[in-house]
Length: 400
Image 1 (cartoon, rainbow, N blue to C red):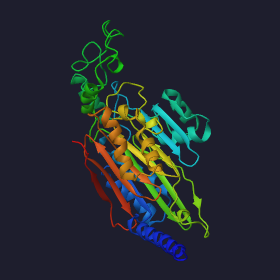
Image 2: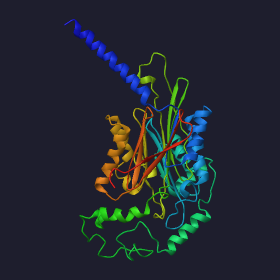
Image 3: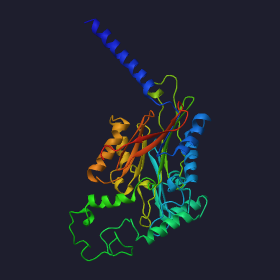
Image 4: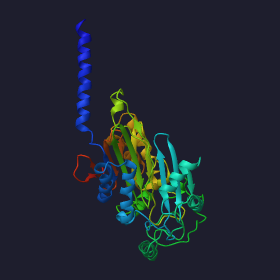
């Protein structure tokens, strides 16, 4: 009996030693920058700041997103992207503090380029979570942000004009007259469609499967309007985590620091995440005054410093119904790896809407990351301190 305690101690110590060794072998080299899609220039700019210049994660994501904003990545990120069916570009943005679980968001923001800063003002200077429309713009301007500014460009107006000349295809109407699959509006609801139809069908209209098989044509690479960027930096004994997702001229500015003293336990010596999620989204030819998933916490993005963060891209109208990023973070909290959590979140949507198009990436609080997608091939870009340059990772859907 005297041997057993010694054996248990040996096994326990050995297990800890192996765990530490595994951590050293599998964790990314911090600092690290990750972004959705092959936005290499944006990741390089962020990495230059946080890795080579020793800058903060906040400044890194601002620099990276600013590059994408100026370049109007994919022709849809930034002002001049994604006009609605009236030809106007509006912006959504959301900022989430994953430490305090505080959120600020704006939807259908007009005439103000700096949507993410407006969302930050909502979080920091009001008790509200979400402001929308012209009053969100008035709020932004009243607190000193530049504007009013025309968010349309010659290119966006030309794209809208071509869409209108092409019979307004595709669009986001259904069960109306004239037939929205072949004609422009204005549309009306016929007597046969006003509550008299088969209520077992989605919204009293066509089935969800049929609906998304047609809607998915409007969403694809270059029509997702989203860059998501996550940065973890490490400065002396401070570990900072910033997650930002931005599009349509959005970049976020928020940071919390966690100091670690020399007597901290092993888990406390790992990089502790703070605490920012920011996201913006808009969609081509949507109805005016749409508030997309970009302004909805848990749909477009979510962060909890106890666990990690997630960013989503794709068909936001469907994805917001499932809060995929909230699901990812909660699944990681329950013990799933980032890869398992990302795949599980996508699978939950796919079971109900098999024709949807979308993707998520997950990052846990140690910097381990993964992605999952459906309906398209998804890419995300990474650069950590051990990499000479940004590397693009390609994620294929589990179900074709």
